[in-house]
Length: 530
Ligand SMILES: Cc1cc2nc3c(=O)[nH]c(=O)nc-3n(C[C@H](O)[C@H](O)[C@H](O)COP(=O)(O)OP(=O)(O)OC[C@H]3O[C@@H](n4cnc5c(N)ncnc54)[C@H](O)[C@@H]3O)c2cc1C
Ligand SMILES: *[C@@H]1O[C@H](CO)[C@@H](O)[C@H](O)[C@H]1NC(C)=O
Ligand SMILES: *[C@@H]1O[C@H](CO)[C@@H](O)[C@H](O)[C@H]1NC(C)=O
Ligand SMILES: *[C@@H]1O[C@H](CO)[C@@H](O)[C@H](O)[C@H]1NC(C)=O
Ligand SMILES: *[C@@H]1O[C@H](CO)[C@@H](O)[C@H](O)[C@H]1NC(C)=O
Ligand SMILES: *[C@@H]1O[C@H](CO)[C@@H](O)[C@H](O)[C@H]1NC(C)=O
Ligand SMILES: *[C@@H]1O[C@H](CO)[C@@H](O)[C@H](O)[C@H]1NC(C)=O
Image (cartoon, rainbow, N blue to C red):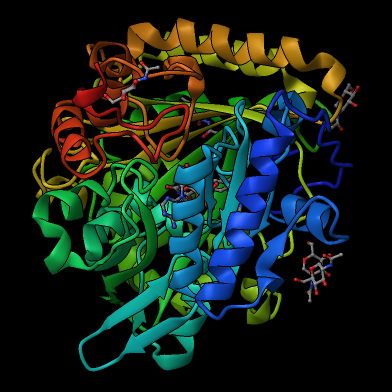
């Protein structure tokens, strides 16, 4: 079982635990009535309100859940799910949420690793953005307005229908939602040449805690700064982002070559660390590492060099020959294709029609847990060998490490340009993942990934030990479930995700949402609540 980025997962039954929470039914009824009245007032019908009695409630709830783990540990189901079609419905939801103390959670693509967009330990409801997903492209200015309920697949597809040389730099899995992904960063196969998604946001439409609809000009540069990498959730509901598209060549080149331990994988991975962030910006060589049975039936470690080159194969080969001859890449390993086809390739849909990018259905899912790190000094060979030992322990259980190189355009921005701080000085990011089907073994898998993470401390960034916000990990610290959280307590996780930018995020939060209306297990706290 593979977790990421091949976006195809095996199917398991989702067992959302249904224990009615300790919340007062009284409040919930008042809240529902408030919603109905407010929706009516704004002339929208209540068709977009799903209570647990509605036959579609459960399928809507489950439709974009990618990870069974948070849901299976969750004690509460949402009081209601709303699927707004108009901004007025979001304003109504904010109004009623405040009035009746039912917590608001917003969900775009539902890919949050800890399920923060659809679970909560206090009475809550979900604003699901699925119906707000229009995409409009301006091919003269090379910009796009993208509503946050859209998926990356929908965005990539829509761009490709307008132009062969326009694209956008964002993540690999087509069902990832724009709302969470852009507001939390957005790393992808073109990030060395073009940076991350949040680097390209040029305007936004946001509804704040007072229900006000703001754009870049009316929200001001501080708030606009915060929602480009600091996570949308702490500041409001982002309805749409305007992004600058990027210009790409008509033909790009992909390859995915594997090397086992017998084929010197250890030396190759070791060597990779010395150039992965410095090589030609057009080339991004990502590494996937896992234990597997090789064709001769022998257990080994596989290092998969999964790569995109923004150019033709004849220009790629000399670069590889000069910088990484040890890999022995040959023309036959490479395939030239339009960029849009490469998005299928990296998502594991090679050969399928482009429409697959529009498929939002994803009942399929598994239990998984992920963590992240940032590496600033190459890991020595004996360190890599220890990682192999960890991988061998989890052999059948979909354990995988991803090494994603930084450098290139990512380093063109200062650490404080936007809240995403992982710029110069970082060679690559590690994504640790483990997935499993049988939850009886839950604790063993969790222990495994925590042990590995703890072992890795000696090889990765320190003070703070950096983590990538979009690879959400509640192990690194979280807010109090009830009541306020101090700056000091939130700093534990805040500095890992944002480094010194955390201070400015708190300042912005204090200005725009002093009562901490928009909150979750890892939201930025206002200082006014201390
Ligand atoms: C299979 C898979 C592949 C992935 N691949 C990549 C990758 O290649 N690169 C990468 O960088 N990341 C990747 N990720 C991580 C992904 O970027 C994050 O999980 C991201 O937050 C998902 O956004 P979402 O809208 O789908 O999630 P959601 O669960 O809907 O939202 C995530 C968070 O953002 C908040 N939020 C969502 N919408 C809004 C909104 N409109 N306004 C305000 N707040 C909002 C939610 O409340 C939640 O806190 C991947 C994740 C998965 C599961
Ligand atoms: C459930 O929701 C659908 C879609 O909004 C609506 O058509 C239907 O009437 C609802 N059913 C119930 C029982 O509320
Ligand atoms: C592995 O490395 C050794 C020593 O550098 C070399 O002799 C050998 O040819 C390499 N093996 C493969 C399969 O590349
Ligand atoms: C790998 O090989 C081992 C031992 O031969 C076997 O038990 C296991 O089922 C194999 N795993 C896979 C995924 O084929
Ligand atoms: C790369 O190859 C490995 C092994 O065949 C496979 O598991 C993985 O899905 C491939 N990745 C891509 C992006 O094709
Ligand atoms: C969309 O994907 C789901 C899950 O992978 C699949 O079952 C379904 O057939 C797909 N739908 C279409 C229209 O291709
Ligand atoms: C949290 O902070 C707010 C704003 O300062 C305050 O009104 C509220 O009483 C605090 N709540 C708790 C539980 O301390």
